[in-house]
Length: 168
Image 1 (cartoon, rainbow, N blue to C red):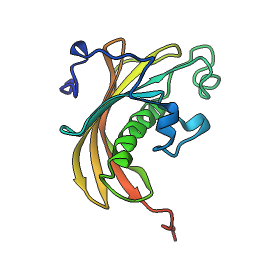
Image 2 (image 1 turned 135 degrees about the horizontal axis):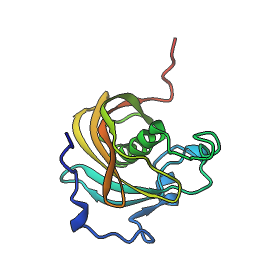
Image 3 (image 1 turned 90 degrees about the vertical axis):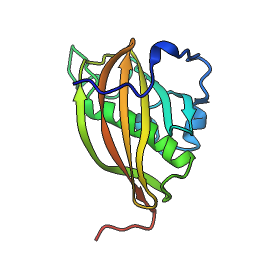
């Protein structure tokens, strides 16, 4: 069963060349760098519904292309999930909904991959905060689209992580 759309993309227009936040502004909020940067821009934020839309331009130079799969580059599902997590993390950190120094993965549920994603695609991502336990965790719904078609969706849990936390 297909989940209800977080946003109706048919009724929204974006200028992908002039996002609300570009990669330089994203870097002021998100800590990921180099190969792990998985957002190109933020297009819309709605603090009333606690939702966000962003995108990733999937280039022919992505780090995974050579090995996944040789001769048939297919964007790995785990990287799709990382894109959604970075979008949710941007919202959580920008609006300090959880606290902590970082937002880490706490889990994922009901993740469905509906269609492959290839280099040369523009992946439009959306996320919505569904539940928050301040200082502990937040739950987000997420969806990804290519050419208006849902390619993946699910729910994730983000957890607050502090720099001084040590694993023993």
